[in-house]
Image 1 (cartoon, rainbow, N blue to C red):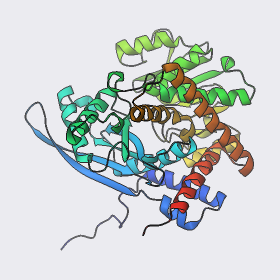
Image 2: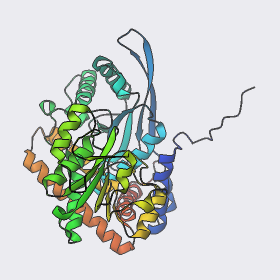
Image 3: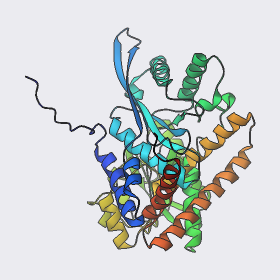
Image 4: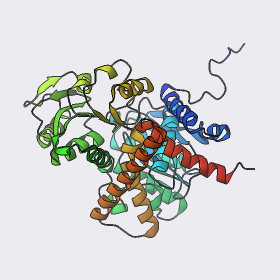
Length: 426
């Protein structure tokens, strides 16, 4: 006799991260009095694909990897979102990130719905040849639901320009012609955009600098701690250092360092490139990796992973501003604590918009068969991020709420209105 399943129908993506995304939507829906029908339409993804990828390893062993692609809403235009290769990737994680990508694109005024996907694997354990086989098989499996005007992937955790080149080539081979608009984040030689790799980090700094200006707090007088020194955190730290801010602490997966007088970020970056971590850097004090969140500073930048600022450590944060440079680094309970303490939280759906914004620029250029200069890209990015911040601040004043709620309200209203106008088919 079959045992009764422990999974309720419709619970495929019910993870803690997805629960966090849904709770955020619920709170905003109550605040803006969202129509229940529109809430129902936005609370779950419209489409999800799960695929098994048989891949031959270099040893000759056949291994099956699991791949995902979740498309949250099809209302706004083609869907857009990264490809994440990680050993703990799940359908629920992809569903949450796809929902957040919908809000991010809507907040920034981009003509996309949100999507997310990837493969559950450890990319560090795969050789380049094995990685190519995984990417190409995954691209082939996704072909029915992706395309330049259907769903446009981009790099994310564990992937980069190389993987986008393989994905682009696999799709183009299948359709019989070069289709550069099928992915963004490609190498420049294949139609990529200068500055795409740094765009997420630069967008964080653009929003932070604009917010500090409105608070009349000079950027070059701010003391900053950055948790995470990967593609995002390293760019944030380097850009803030270049603009005169004092970076007092840095952390990555290997360890953390601090110097109240300020770290020489370029020298730290050189050390990390040589040793694979900031740990062991000889010109700073070694601290516990989690302690970087509680360093005395003006601005804290969580740029590592989700759920880093929690109910447990939020009371101990010693900063005036949290500028989120990771997806979902602050739990809803921690949000409430920081709000009560008067800490300004610049939310991820706003601050992390730089990557998808420059991806949008790359996608537009691919369709136009025309290339913008790096200066044009940088100016357009700064303007897009600053305009989005202004919309958030206006909504926060109107609704008398925190910035995350304000940002979500702007985005949810825009997507809900589009869904209402398109109605329900059939």
